[in-house]
Length: 64
Image 1 (tube, rainbow, N blue to C red):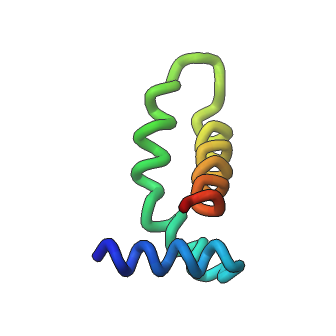
Image 2: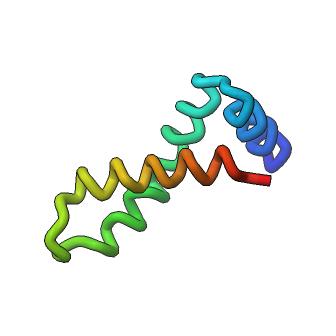
């Protein structure tokens, strides 16, 4: 399981858009759980979700 995820991350890092999309899709729950912590602080949840996804993509690209 861990090896599969690691391979998916490596594929995404070299530019495989399908691998990146799969990682983002499979981890939507993680992003939403973090976004919900900021509910009621003056920001739209959908905007925070987009920022969270961008941050998640950046973390994939920088994963070592």
